[in-house]
Length: 275
Image (cartoon, rainbow, N blue to C red; front, side):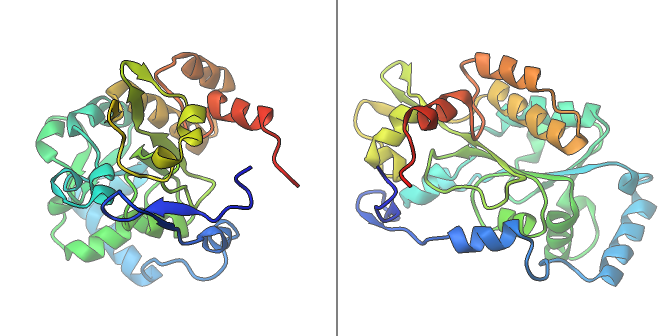
């Protein structure tokens, strides 16, 4: 029933609905891997790799995960910026520790608050590398095994390089994923004390278009447990050992739904798509 309507979103104040840019063609190009990837040339990448391995032994022999948490949104006057915020960075501690336990490097970029992750093995900051920060940002965003972040500019680089991206604390249906290798973890929307299902959110045009939440509703950032479940899910895909029974167990945990959780899937099954 939504198929013949224009894509809509809210203006930056989160008040007025406006036509949304149709990114489907761009997403198709990324998914078909058409064109050159926005990465550094091989010579520069090799120079950086050798520099890092000389500074940090065996760094390149391990998977590297980028964590880029957006923290400035909460201070913005723009509603669209406010909802693109990671919430408390403390909620990511257990997941970062889990990735460290898997033997991964974790490199923090952007506004990630480093103090929350002190003492975790193989945790690095972009400032640990004595090279141009912008150069290193591009290097890591285009070569890492996984990027964990919110909707913003950086994940577009990773999507265009066919890298998996975990988009956490995303506003439901405000913007999708460009790459099929990526998954999304939506913020929690509550009406009173009840957490809304994806179907209930999707049926509410104001919320699904990204408008300001009506009185009586509230937006709650992803919990530590939700982020951990999403990290385990995407790492399972990356390592090729994803267990669908594990997926079912996580879905039974009503606190967690990934991009196409059972609740969303059931909505589409019960609502036939027009030809």
